Figure 1 (cartoon, helix red, strand yellow):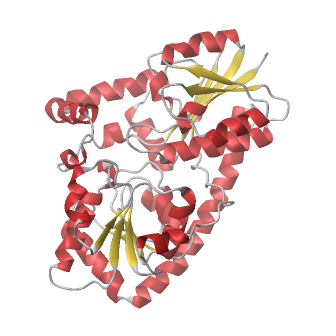
Figure 2: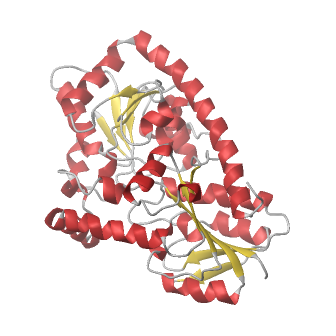
Figure 3: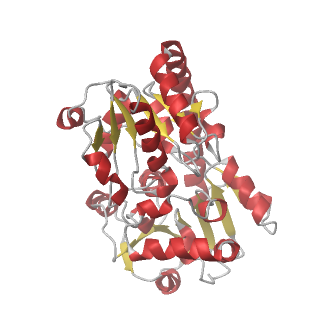
Length: 393
């Protein structure tokens, strides 16, 4: 297979306790578009046999005649590359390959979604989210070793960025691109480009039945997501809601999804003002985004930021953090709050409840901004696919 492209489909497989992630959605969407555009370019895919794989993706690969090669360790990549005459290797989640010295003739294209291990070592409430010995060990290392832990992670990124002479780095936002260039001055700016994360497919209709199952009415709930991921900061948001509820009836439920194994949620399961649910399918999540009164997303770090955009396209009001890539993406269409301040989160939640004029204005701006970003996402997806196929874009 001369000049073949190897696609890292393991990036779409779940990691840790979360069945889905922004990086996984990214890898899936790029693969789908690559199948549509590849023409006669030989294409192979990788999957990790230790993790589950979406049956629909496997079926899609099979229908397009794409061999899916099993691997277990990052070192397995080297014989695969040499044995199949791979010219280009693409990964949307490349850090697992950072320890490898790849053949100098290999075009290695990869996406860096963000630099959370360097930008945000830990948080004072991270212990509330612990779900496994491995997550506890990471927290202990980050807190005890501090700067040394950060430098170790930085060396991991540096090895990845120097793993082959022909590295092409795709940053999911300008924020990530310029953070990379700032932290790693050896990088050639001409080899680092910004291509926004692609929009998810729009062919899955929202499953409005999820509202009936949860006992919710349209516009009758605040929405939070990713309850088991400390970087998404749901714990502080729930503290803010509790603080408001001590003195007033909000007149709406608070729905928190993605409970995973986060122990701090026990108290909220026993409170009928809160609804605690697990991770949702794309169709159910789409319905929840669409019908929420307000989406509260006080994330502590973000390389791109799918969820606010998914809400804004429906005109749903968004309260979020003015950090990392979010101002770049959301412009003046979000209500900003300091994610470390429960006081400020309380104020913004109350503001949304009481100011109908503001909600209407944010709904208008949100729809416009989401459409503008969607146009850029579509164009940039075509650029990425052309880059992988080496078509001069």
